[in-house]
Image (tube, rainbow, N blue to C red; front, side):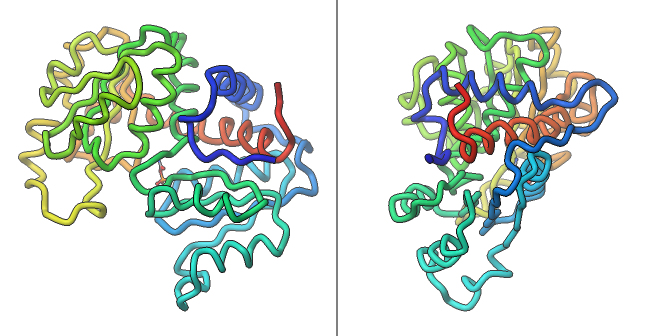
Length: 305
Ligand code: CP
Protein backbone atom coordinates (compact mmCIF):
# COMPACT_ATOMS: atom_id res chain seq x y z
CA UNK A 1 0.00 0.00 0.00
CA UNK A 2 1.25 3.48 -0.74
CA UNK A 3 0.41 6.60 1.15
CA UNK A 4 -0.14 10.10 -0.17
CA UNK A 5 2.91 12.32 0.21
CA UNK A 6 2.12 15.04 -2.31
CA UNK A 7 0.33 16.10 -5.47
CA UNK A 8 3.52 16.57 -7.50
CA UNK A 9 3.97 12.89 -8.31
CA UNK A 10 0.33 12.03 -8.91
CA UNK A 11 -0.94 11.78 -12.46
CA UNK A 12 -3.85 13.87 -13.63
CA UNK A 13 -5.90 10.66 -13.80
CA UNK A 14 -5.10 9.78 -10.18
CA UNK A 15 -6.13 13.26 -9.05
CA UNK A 16 -9.32 13.04 -11.09
CA UNK A 17 -10.16 9.65 -9.57
CA UNK A 18 -9.90 11.05 -6.03
CA UNK A 19 -12.00 14.09 -6.94
CA UNK A 20 -14.66 11.89 -8.56
CA UNK A 21 -14.77 9.53 -5.62
CA UNK A 22 -15.05 12.44 -3.15
CA UNK A 23 -18.28 13.45 -4.87
CA UNK A 24 -19.78 10.07 -3.90
CA UNK A 25 -19.13 10.91 -0.25
CA UNK A 26 -20.59 14.42 -0.26
CA UNK A 27 -23.76 14.83 1.79
CA UNK A 28 -27.03 15.40 -0.03
CA UNK A 29 -28.75 18.77 0.26
CA UNK A 30 -29.84 19.24 3.89
CA UNK A 31 -28.25 15.96 5.02
CA UNK A 32 -25.17 15.05 7.06
CA UNK A 33 -22.30 12.84 5.90
CA UNK A 34 -23.41 9.23 5.46
CA UNK A 35 -21.80 6.34 7.31
CA UNK A 36 -20.11 3.56 5.36
CA UNK A 37 -18.53 0.27 6.36
CA UNK A 38 -15.84 0.41 3.70
CA UNK A 39 -12.95 0.57 6.19
CA UNK A 40 -14.46 -1.34 9.10
CA UNK A 41 -11.72 -2.88 11.26
CA UNK A 42 -9.05 -0.48 9.98
CA UNK A 43 -7.24 2.00 12.19
CA UNK A 44 -5.55 5.29 11.43
CA UNK A 45 -3.31 7.42 13.64
CA UNK A 46 -3.40 11.21 13.32
CA UNK A 47 0.03 12.49 14.36
CA UNK A 48 0.18 16.29 14.38
CA UNK A 49 3.37 18.16 15.27
CA UNK A 50 1.78 21.50 14.33
CA UNK A 51 -1.54 23.09 15.24
CA UNK A 52 -4.59 22.20 13.18
CA UNK A 53 -8.34 22.57 13.40
CA UNK A 54 -9.59 21.65 9.93
CA UNK A 55 -7.22 18.94 8.73
CA UNK A 56 -6.95 16.91 11.91
CA UNK A 57 -10.66 17.01 12.70
CA UNK A 58 -11.78 16.24 9.18
CA UNK A 59 -9.38 13.29 8.82
CA UNK A 60 -10.78 11.91 12.07
CA UNK A 61 -14.38 12.41 10.96
CA UNK A 62 -13.60 10.98 7.52
CA UNK A 63 -12.07 7.83 9.02
CA UNK A 64 -15.04 7.32 11.33
CA UNK A 65 -17.57 7.91 8.54
CA UNK A 66 -15.88 5.08 6.64
CA UNK A 67 -16.13 2.77 9.65
CA UNK A 68 -12.43 2.97 10.63
CA UNK A 69 -11.07 3.74 14.10
CA UNK A 70 -9.05 6.95 14.49
CA UNK A 71 -6.63 7.97 17.21
CA UNK A 72 -5.24 11.52 17.39
CA UNK A 73 -1.93 12.49 18.99
CA UNK A 74 -0.35 15.94 19.19
CA UNK A 75 3.37 16.60 19.59
CA UNK A 76 2.83 18.06 23.06
CA UNK A 77 1.05 14.88 24.17
CA UNK A 78 3.60 12.50 22.62
CA UNK A 79 6.96 11.31 23.86
CA UNK A 80 8.63 13.70 21.41
CA UNK A 81 8.11 16.20 24.24
CA UNK A 82 10.43 13.95 26.33
CA UNK A 83 13.17 13.93 23.73
CA UNK A 84 12.21 10.89 21.64
CA UNK A 85 13.34 11.21 18.02
CA UNK A 86 10.83 11.44 15.18
CA UNK A 87 12.01 8.09 13.74
CA UNK A 88 11.63 6.36 17.11
CA UNK A 89 8.18 7.86 17.59
CA UNK A 90 7.06 6.67 14.16
CA UNK A 91 8.53 3.20 14.66
CA UNK A 92 6.75 2.98 18.01
CA UNK A 93 3.43 3.90 16.48
CA UNK A 94 4.00 1.55 13.54
CA UNK A 95 4.58 -1.32 15.99
CA UNK A 96 0.97 -0.88 17.08
CA UNK A 97 -0.01 -1.81 13.52
CA UNK A 98 -2.16 1.10 12.35
CA UNK A 99 -3.22 0.90 8.71
CA UNK A 100 -2.03 4.43 8.02
CA UNK A 101 -0.37 7.35 9.77
CA UNK A 102 -1.62 10.84 8.94
CA UNK A 103 1.13 13.27 9.72
CA UNK A 104 1.72 17.02 9.91
CA UNK A 105 5.21 18.29 10.60
CA UNK A 106 7.02 21.64 10.45
CA UNK A 107 9.94 20.15 8.49
CA UNK A 108 9.55 20.02 4.71
CA UNK A 109 10.12 16.44 3.57
CA UNK A 110 9.61 14.84 7.01
CA UNK A 111 6.90 12.40 5.83
CA UNK A 112 8.91 11.52 2.70
CA UNK A 113 11.97 10.71 4.83
CA UNK A 114 9.93 8.61 7.25
CA UNK A 115 8.10 6.74 4.50
CA UNK A 116 11.48 5.42 3.31
CA UNK A 117 11.91 3.72 6.69
CA UNK A 118 8.36 2.58 7.31
CA UNK A 119 5.99 0.12 5.65
CA UNK A 120 2.91 1.78 7.15
CA UNK A 121 1.52 4.21 4.56
CA UNK A 122 1.88 7.87 5.49
CA UNK A 123 -0.60 10.54 4.45
CA UNK A 124 0.95 13.99 4.39
CA UNK A 125 -1.27 16.46 6.25
CA UNK A 126 1.17 19.32 5.59
CA UNK A 127 4.99 19.28 5.69
CA UNK A 128 6.64 22.61 6.38
CA UNK A 129 6.56 24.87 3.34
CA UNK A 130 6.43 21.94 0.91
CA UNK A 131 3.02 20.31 0.27
CA UNK A 132 -0.48 19.99 1.71
CA UNK A 133 -1.98 17.56 -0.79
CA UNK A 134 -5.46 17.07 0.67
CA UNK A 135 -5.93 20.86 0.84
CA UNK A 136 -5.34 21.17 -2.90
CA UNK A 137 -7.69 18.25 -3.55
CA UNK A 138 -10.49 19.78 -1.49
CA UNK A 139 -9.90 23.14 -3.15
CA UNK A 140 -10.26 21.52 -6.58
CA UNK A 141 -13.41 19.67 -5.48
CA UNK A 142 -14.87 23.00 -4.31
CA UNK A 143 -14.09 24.72 -7.61
CA UNK A 144 -15.65 21.86 -9.60
CA UNK A 145 -18.75 21.88 -7.38
CA UNK A 146 -19.46 25.46 -8.54
CA UNK A 147 -19.63 24.24 -12.12
CA UNK A 148 -16.21 25.56 -13.17
CA UNK A 149 -13.74 23.57 -15.22
CA UNK A 150 -10.08 23.48 -14.19
CA UNK A 151 -8.94 23.78 -17.81
CA UNK A 152 -8.02 27.38 -18.60
CA UNK A 153 -9.22 28.52 -15.18
CA UNK A 154 -7.48 31.72 -14.08
CA UNK A 155 -6.47 31.37 -10.44
CA UNK A 156 -4.85 34.16 -8.40
CA UNK A 157 -3.04 32.88 -5.30
CA UNK A 158 -2.22 35.87 -3.10
CA UNK A 159 -0.22 36.27 0.08
CA UNK A 160 2.72 34.57 1.72
CA UNK A 161 3.64 32.38 -1.24
CA UNK A 162 7.15 31.65 0.06
CA UNK A 163 5.96 29.73 3.11
CA UNK A 164 2.83 28.21 1.64
CA UNK A 165 2.52 24.46 1.18
CA UNK A 166 -1.06 25.16 0.07
CA UNK A 167 0.21 27.29 -2.83
CA UNK A 168 2.67 24.60 -3.93
CA UNK A 169 0.14 21.76 -3.85
CA UNK A 170 -2.40 23.89 -5.69
CA UNK A 171 0.12 24.85 -8.34
CA UNK A 172 0.99 21.17 -8.89
CA UNK A 173 -2.66 20.15 -9.07
CA UNK A 174 -4.11 23.00 -11.12
CA UNK A 175 -1.28 22.97 -13.64
CA UNK A 176 -1.97 19.27 -14.41
CA UNK A 177 -5.37 20.41 -15.70
CA UNK A 178 -4.14 23.40 -17.70
CA UNK A 179 -5.13 26.18 -15.30
CA UNK A 180 -3.35 29.55 -15.51
CA UNK A 181 -2.00 30.46 -12.09
CA UNK A 182 -0.84 33.88 -10.94
CA UNK A 183 1.18 33.90 -7.73
CA UNK A 184 1.12 37.28 -6.01
CA UNK A 185 2.62 38.75 -2.87
CA UNK A 186 5.27 41.13 -1.61
CA UNK A 187 8.62 40.48 -3.34
CA UNK A 188 10.09 39.18 -0.07
CA UNK A 189 7.42 36.45 0.03
CA UNK A 190 7.41 35.59 -3.69
CA UNK A 191 10.35 33.35 -4.69
CA UNK A 192 11.06 33.70 -8.43
CA UNK A 193 11.94 30.00 -8.74
CA UNK A 194 8.28 29.09 -8.19
CA UNK A 195 7.61 30.12 -11.79
CA UNK A 196 9.55 27.04 -12.84
CA UNK A 197 7.82 24.40 -10.71
CA UNK A 198 4.94 23.83 -13.12
CA UNK A 199 3.63 25.07 -16.46
CA UNK A 200 1.16 27.97 -16.57
CA UNK A 201 2.57 29.90 -13.59
CA UNK A 202 3.27 33.64 -13.60
CA UNK A 203 4.33 35.94 -10.76
CA UNK A 204 3.40 39.50 -9.85
CA UNK A 205 3.71 41.78 -6.85
CA UNK A 206 0.68 43.80 -8.03
CA UNK A 207 -2.54 42.55 -6.47
CA UNK A 208 -4.78 44.32 -9.01
CA UNK A 209 -2.91 42.63 -11.86
CA UNK A 210 -3.30 39.24 -10.19
CA UNK A 211 -7.03 39.66 -9.67
CA UNK A 212 -7.88 41.06 -13.13
CA UNK A 213 -10.11 38.50 -14.84
CA UNK A 214 -9.62 35.86 -12.12
CA UNK A 215 -12.10 33.00 -11.84
CA UNK A 216 -10.72 32.07 -8.43
CA UNK A 217 -8.97 34.21 -5.82
CA UNK A 218 -7.16 32.11 -3.23
CA UNK A 219 -5.99 34.15 -0.26
CA UNK A 220 -3.19 32.96 2.04
CA UNK A 221 -2.34 33.78 5.63
CA UNK A 222 1.04 35.36 6.39
CA UNK A 223 2.87 32.61 8.26
CA UNK A 224 4.65 34.61 10.93
CA UNK A 225 5.60 31.38 12.72
CA UNK A 226 7.93 30.48 9.80
CA UNK A 227 9.63 33.89 9.55
CA UNK A 228 12.69 34.97 11.45
CA UNK A 229 12.40 38.70 10.79
CA UNK A 230 9.25 40.68 11.51
CA UNK A 231 8.03 41.23 7.92
CA UNK A 232 5.74 44.30 7.94
CA UNK A 233 3.04 45.99 10.04
CA UNK A 234 -0.41 44.37 9.71
CA UNK A 235 -2.16 47.53 8.47
CA UNK A 236 0.46 48.09 5.77
CA UNK A 237 0.12 44.49 4.58
CA UNK A 238 -3.67 44.80 4.44
CA UNK A 239 -3.41 48.02 2.40
CA UNK A 240 -1.38 46.31 -0.35
CA UNK A 241 -2.39 42.63 -0.13
CA UNK A 242 -5.66 42.48 1.81
CA UNK A 243 -8.71 41.39 -0.21
CA UNK A 244 -11.48 43.99 0.02
CA UNK A 245 -14.90 44.34 -1.68
CA UNK A 246 -13.59 46.78 -4.30
CA UNK A 247 -11.19 44.11 -5.58
CA UNK A 248 -14.01 41.74 -6.52
CA UNK A 249 -15.19 44.08 -9.29
CA UNK A 250 -11.86 43.51 -11.09
CA UNK A 251 -12.33 39.74 -11.18
CA UNK A 252 -14.89 37.79 -13.18
CA UNK A 253 -18.47 38.34 -11.96
CA UNK A 254 -18.78 34.76 -10.69
CA UNK A 255 -15.36 34.78 -8.98
CA UNK A 256 -14.87 32.34 -6.09
CA UNK A 257 -12.98 33.60 -3.04
CA UNK A 258 -11.11 30.80 -1.32
CA UNK A 259 -8.93 30.57 1.77
CA UNK A 260 -7.50 27.39 3.31
CA UNK A 261 -7.88 28.85 6.80
CA UNK A 262 -7.24 29.80 9.44
CA UNK A 263 -8.29 33.26 8.19
CA UNK A 264 -6.98 36.45 9.75
CA UNK A 265 -9.74 39.01 9.26
CA UNK A 266 -8.40 42.48 8.59
CA UNK A 267 -4.94 41.17 7.76
CA UNK A 268 -5.22 39.29 4.44
CA UNK A 269 -9.00 39.40 3.94
CA UNK A 270 -11.76 41.77 5.02
CA UNK A 271 -14.77 40.44 6.90
CA UNK A 272 -17.04 41.78 4.14
CA UNK A 273 -15.35 39.54 1.59
CA UNK A 274 -14.88 36.52 3.87
CA UNK A 275 -18.61 36.53 4.66
CA UNK A 276 -19.78 37.51 1.17
CA UNK A 277 -21.71 35.48 -1.38
CA UNK A 278 -18.49 35.05 -3.34
CA UNK A 279 -16.74 33.29 -0.46
CA UNK A 280 -16.62 29.48 -0.60
CA UNK A 281 -14.46 29.14 2.52
CA UNK A 282 -16.92 26.99 4.46
CA UNK A 283 -17.59 24.81 1.40
CA UNK A 284 -13.84 24.13 1.36
CA UNK A 285 -14.03 23.00 4.99
CA UNK A 286 -17.02 20.77 4.25
CA UNK A 287 -15.28 19.23 1.24
CA UNK A 288 -12.34 18.42 3.50
CA UNK A 289 -14.33 15.49 4.83
CA UNK A 290 -15.44 13.95 1.52
CA UNK A 291 -12.02 14.41 -0.07
CA UNK A 292 -10.26 12.86 2.92
CA UNK A 293 -12.74 9.96 2.83
CA UNK A 294 -11.72 9.39 -0.79
CA UNK A 295 -8.03 9.59 0.12
CA UNK A 296 -8.39 7.20 3.07
CA UNK A 297 -10.30 4.73 0.94
CA UNK A 298 -7.61 4.90 -1.70
CA UNK A 299 -4.74 4.45 0.75
CA UNK A 300 -6.35 1.85 3.03
CA UNK A 301 -8.67 0.11 0.66
CA UNK A 302 -6.49 -0.13 -2.42
CA UNK A 303 -6.71 1.74 -5.67
CA UNK A 304 -10.23 2.75 -6.63
CA UNK A 305 -9.72 2.93 -10.37
N1 CP B 1 -6.11 24.50 6.02
C1 CP B 1 -5.56 23.89 7.07
O1 CP B 1 -4.64 23.09 6.95
O2 CP B 1 -6.12 24.23 8.28
P1 CP B 1 -5.66 23.64 9.67
O3 CP B 1 -4.28 24.19 9.96
O4 CP B 1 -6.69 24.13 10.67
O5 CP B 1 -5.64 22.14 9.57
